[in-house]
Image (cartoon, rainbow, N blue to C red; front, side, top):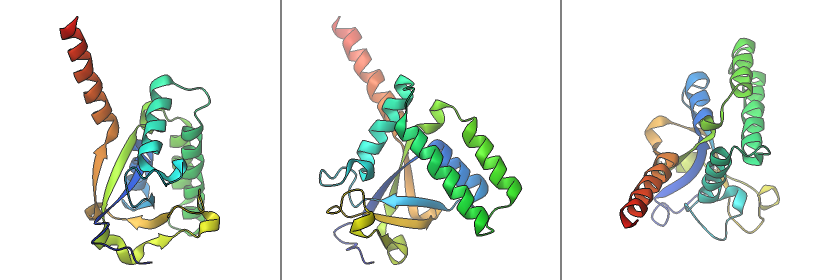
Length: 177
């Protein structure tokens, strides 16, 4: 798979605090990520649009949504990942159990979103294109990376940005009252 690094010097992926922490604690800091060419591409399916994903996590965490579809999907994904890592002998049975327990007892705030801004040049040779029949939307490009390394991205805590914007807006409202 070749992505035009001049046209797309950066790629984007949304994850959660807990997923990143599990990657760091159990998978040597290697992250499995779904990648989008843009942070917010209207042609991209909602389930693979980094901005939409982040907004959904923030909404579910902020409202303590009892159905929390995005949070449940994230838990299932992390559990499936732990099973795959165990099957491929990359983690022990004890580590798999520790991961499962961590996920089971997780709190809402552990599902606040983080944004990976990925240096395309550093990962281009390892990107896997998702076939259209496996993508969330057949006509939108989707990619994945099995092993994103720490020196290949910058990380932004989107909840911090949303929180800061909310605090600023509240101050403006308070001043105008």
